Amino acid sequence: MSVAARDHMYRELLTRVADEQRGFGSSLQPPATEQQLQELVKAARNDVHAEVPADHVNFLRQSNGLDWNGVVIYATETVPIVGHPERSIPGIVEMNLNFRDDPRFNDLLVLGSNGMDLYTYRIATGLYEVYDEIPHELLDTISTYDQLITRALTRSLQ
Image 1: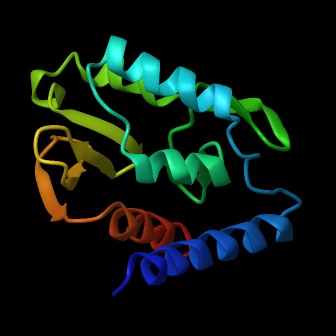
Image 2: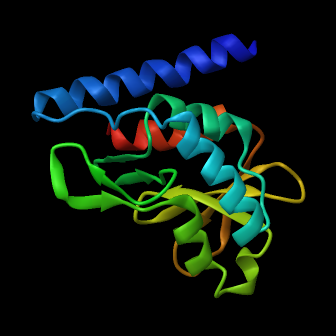
Image 3: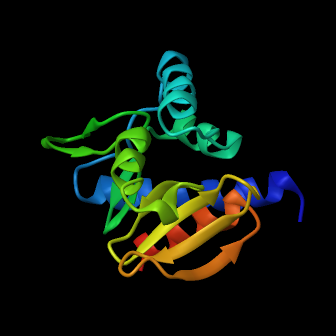
């Protein structure tokens, strides 16, 4: 399957999430600005010693984080949820600083969660992994970001 075909599948799911959100008077988060993305990349390098995967940066260009039906994809920084300013989506760096209290997360960049699973990027290998949120056991290894986000978005649409 080509990169464009995989990207098309994940964008289709994101469109379905947006359609469901509209049904509840909400919408996707606005896209991250290039300045927000540059600041995220810099903070990730400096604070958690990780490169943010380019595919995740592209996701954030479409929606700066996501909080829908239990699935949370972390934003460039902590941002208020569209239509719910009393609630927020955590930023990637802030969340990963919290996870680094557990040394098992020193080689991981946690990109999001669904309350049961953590969606992560293994820094050393470039693979994506799904962990049980508690007790942090590896559940699955996934080769592409598109597959990881497709899994997360599919869960949010169930």
